[in-house]
Image (tube, rainbow, N blue to C red; front, top):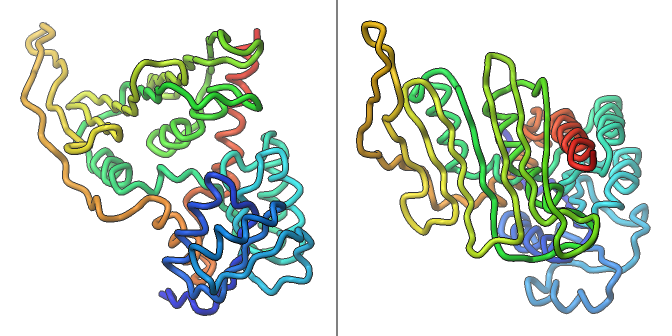
Length: 326
């Protein structure tokens, strides 16, 4: 396996709130002289220089003059499609922040283009690179909780309020991407409900219900109008339940041997104390996401969160939005 990152030359487009995190992460993994940051705000150069004086900065988005072979797009979501398309057409491997585009058909078009050009296209669904989620999936695949029955996710907090997107589009892509990865199938029905209390037409809270084949159900509750922070994912099977609570400081991942079983025609409850599930908490999800992108380019492997996965998440978001507005 080739993990020599010296041959990679990266351009990061966008140095906003999340773009800054990409810059810092790239600076910790790649030779800093191999990194260029592009942002429309000229004063962002000071921020880049404070991270590393070896990183180049420009406010000129005309990328044809830049020397690079991989790119990260962290610009506003409405710019993702055209910028990613231009980069793929110019022969660059691309990691695009979520959402990869604002329309599923555009995401599908980008995926087809990447295949045609033999380039890597990846979306930044960063929680799929969280070591706790990776360990959770491994335990589920190894049969720890038995057959999947029900999944629910709460992603709740007070703010920050968005004006360009509702809470569904702001928070739910993370949860949809995880549920899709765990179930490894597409939902057969999608229903969503919500309420707009602060800004007309922009839902502050939404509840989305997903039905999957084999009688697997899921729901996603997201809100920025909530008194405290909660990030909880619960996966229930017929042999037990596994819970990830990222908002906790310790014991984030737990297994509960709880549930019901039929004995002699009678439904009986089984209930044991939880067990803490260990995972490598030293690994940072964004760093793991970057490594996965770089390794997929160097070793010509398919990214976990490729364009096909990104399009599936967008299709679910679009169907949920239709249901929400109706």
